[in-house]
Length: 190
Image 1: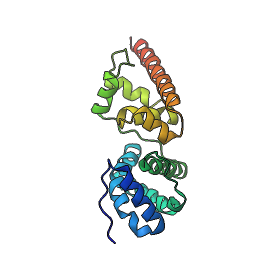
Image 2: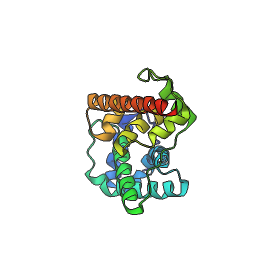
Image 3: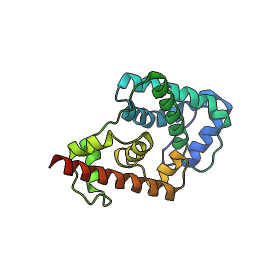
Image 4: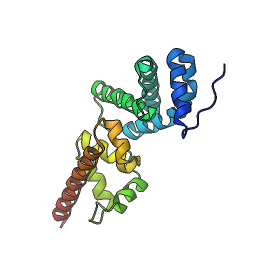
């Protein structure tokens, strides 16, 4: 029996497809087609090399298929479970390759930061780019998820396995750190 296409907005159909794929891995294809673009983008934003992103996305979906029989539908979007696996694949890649974490900083993403009410200071693109390079991996990940990939605090919480309130607090703290670093860089350039 051929599976019906899944509408991203139809969690019930996605749940049914997950259950089918758990019983028969060949039924995973519709889920793969829905989630692959987001996973590829998520990875590419962290490696900035398309060939590497394709390889890591493939590794992610191999691990997804291997772990799928153990997956339990909880009400949280399936995509966040896949993103957590992608994060694990990325962490292993950075550990074994010795490469630095990359951040794809676009003018659009910087504009989102500038427009955010949490930033009361005027942001200069060059300064924010330099400041972002000084952040630790966890802080950088929060900024990427919130501003560069436009995830809500609830979605960030699900991806990072923390509470929504904790996602807000941690993001606010990183924003405060960025503002301090920006002020410091202003004083050093005077």
